[in-house]
Amino acid sequence: MEALIVSMIPAFDARNEADICNKLQEFNKENAQTFTFPELGSETKKKFIGDVLQSLEAAYNTECYCLCLEALRIMSREKHHLYQLAQKEGILLLLKLAGLEEKPNANQNDQVIIEAEKCLCNLVFNSTAVQQICLECDCVRFVMDRVKLYTTRDPQIPMEIKFFDMRLLFLMTALCSSTRSQVRNDHNGIELLTGILERDVLANATPIPHPPTEPSSNGTTDLGATGGATGGEETAMEGLIAAMNAVSTADTIKITEEEANLACEVYKALFNTVIHSKLKEIEQEEESGVLKRLGQACYKMLLTETTSPAKTEECHSQTINLLTCALPLSCVEELTPEPGVGSVARAGLVYRGRNMEAVSSIMRFLEMRVDRAAAAKKLRVVEQLNPVLSALCVLCRRSTHIRRLLKDTVLPPLKKDEACHLPEEGCRIRNKLVRLMTNHSTDIKEVVADFLFILCKESVTKLIKYTGYGNAAGMLARRGLLAGGHGNTDYSPDEEDSDTEEYKDVRNEVNPVTGRVESERPNPMEGMTDEQKEVAAVELANMIHRITREGVIQPMSVSDDGKLIPMMDIVQKAAMQPLREEASDDDDAIA
Image (cartoon, rainbow, N blue to C red; front, side, top):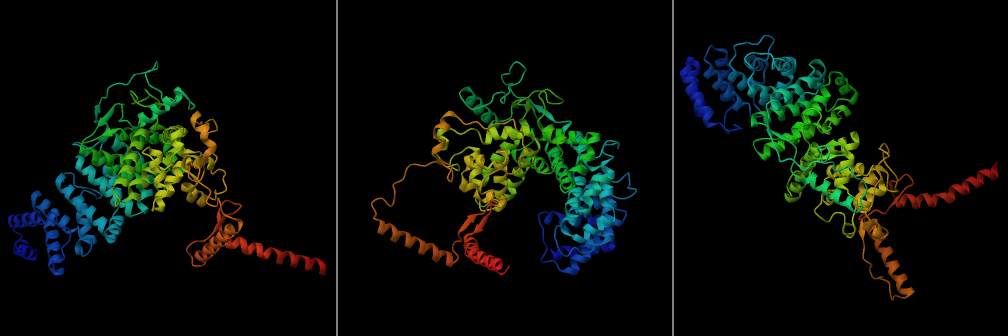
């Protein structure tokens, strides 16, 4: 490596363009997959970077510029020892070549712009110094200025430049918090980024028609038209669950890999732009209707297919990440449009008069991630599951339609055979989620419990019915609800929970701790004399005292406010009570 770079010095010193290109081609080919350069001396590396930067300032041809920028991109992969690349002069040169300056060169070659932006993305990601320089040089403003030209410039800006514009914007908004409000407020960021999704991703998407489902009299099949849970209504509920798990029957669309990549970067930039914004700040966009357009774009993206299942999953994942933000109701409602309204030509899953295909897509995404996490023990469960569960919590709180649908599909009325098994046993989505309530990750078990609690309208009784007291105890303790009651009661009052007739027959036999019907067990003290029972009780008390003293367990009790408190505090409080009463009597006597 060092020998190759040393051999370039004569070509750089002589400013021989042909030799420089030949040597750079050799270097770039050899290091196409190299990310660190531990064997390269600091002086040699510094000299090489300096020579390449000088070549970029010379009047060489486009091919030489691209080769120089490709070499710098390779060197910028290393996090440390960036030298001139992390200095203002080098960054200003790269910004100029990327067309990110006050008066960009209108004749700048597109490939040069792309290579320069690749370098900037690497440097912003790896260096806090570069992040600060880009802030001082108004990098974000120049990116947003170019975004405004996407619809007006002739010829059109290539898709690859748009992709790296969004990649650079995502990195800056992720790593420099001050740029987030700048994008949203100073540059009308939400509207501009939504426009990219509409024009450059979804406008030219190819429809993928599906065979039509059997319609009802109004042209759709409404799976939420019935209520309750008996007889034919149970069949309707089973049909709803099957429809939620089935592949979409609505008209979906297909986008290219290039469009999918751009969409992912736009959604990441949008997420950074709104994640720390207050709801009232985002609602200011409602007058222009951009929030409805954003909701419509999210709806379409959740029904989008692309070149591969992995890329489709990535698109859906980034869309779901955005839905974890506190988006206004006007945006969320566009995820469940009325059939036949706007661009929704035909719906495959209609529930209570709303198109639920997008919500169904999120649920299929969740179940796929849950199954993958269960199959791969080393998988990073938090990163896989937390965003989609958080998004569902947000959506259920914002939309009654969504919460009702998910309640009917995730926690449908129980049957007798379900009541005879532990809530965590089985292959339904309820069983899978209950298993996660005791996951080793605190983040996962808390967000799963919150999701199920919201579906139960934050009723402790309903949650225990579906999960068992043991699985829910952690969440109830965290919220101070171990003694029962409700959490937030701001839910629609017109929804009643219905039990199946067969569940009603065994309801009184369900053990609330385990959440299932327990078979009768023999009395372990049957046949023992009173003296033997007393000895066994003393032995048990001694064992509990020993493991308590050694710190193995700590006996707890539930206080009046529904929280756990140590039993020792109760004992000490009880022991102090007679002393307080005695002191009070003495005070009365003195008086």
